[in-house]
Image (cartoon, rainbow, N blue to C red; front, side, top):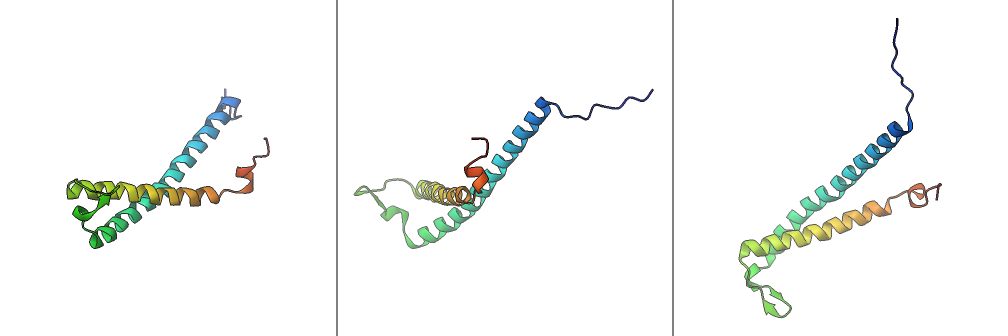
Length: 105
């Protein structure tokens, strides 16, 4: 007696495959945005703080009273957010017409 597995995909298999693909795309898109922006933010912090002393910065007219390490850290995360927004906008603008206007809607 030869038993062959049922290879016909049912609705739940199709749905889980579609969700898995969507999750994979989301992770890939996050990696494509966050990793390059991380690298560029590191370079930007190095260049910026080579020219500007963190103890001489002013925020809203008041001198910054953070330690140098805290100022470097805040600067890095601000540059990272700015670079991530730029990369995210680039990724968003690369969408195809089918992604912008899905046929089923």
